Image 1 (cartoon, helix red, strand yellow):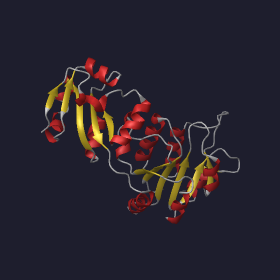
Image 2 (cartoon, one colour):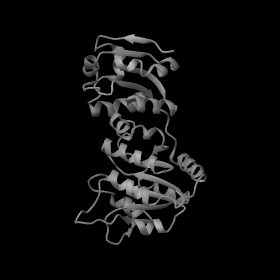
Image 3 (cartoon, one colour):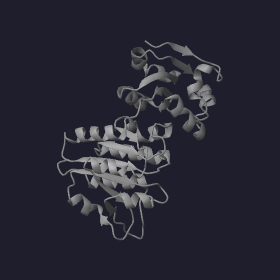
Image 4 (cartoon, one colour):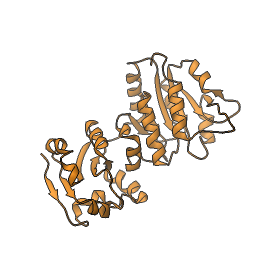
Length: 279
């Protein structure tokens, strides 16, 4: 059972994990280095716990203590009970969900190990699909894309080195904790790592606007057994090097003069269109 500790000083060193959550640059540097991430809201905290992430502590306003009582009783991590005003002073924003948890990160698998895992998972259903996100730097877009990947049955997600952190608080919140249910890792050498996917039998399909691309429906009609979908950054899309490395160029047909979709929306369309026919 966890200790319930009332804290009234915003400078209490025990609350250090929660300080300055609005400072993106601080969190980007501190969270990965120190091996922590922040889960916000009851559902997200529970999903992180159920996914096997170790809890370092919880920060709760009074009305959430009873709601989280079963978690408090189950886990040994300290629970800091604070007023909403103090929580705002510590974090730098209004914690309207009233519950935060500092969680311990897990070591990431290698790309090779995750590809093998994806293959094993894929053997449980028809077809194997993974996503590769290149340089997506917006945390909300990345969180939404992870939620799409979870909802539409992708077996794994791979991030290029410059992608945002999917365990950053904003990404976790937007994904509603889906980042905990989809196996993921970072690639180390991009786009050379495209060769890893070929070695494991995957066809790489790059989402782009090129006139000589095929439509997403044409790609889906091929019923490719092992498919890796590449999606690029919010502004420019996939890099020239990534497009050159891909096996196929694929577009989502647009109407009414619209040239493209937001990357998160495009991922949902691509994941749905290429789902196995038995799904």
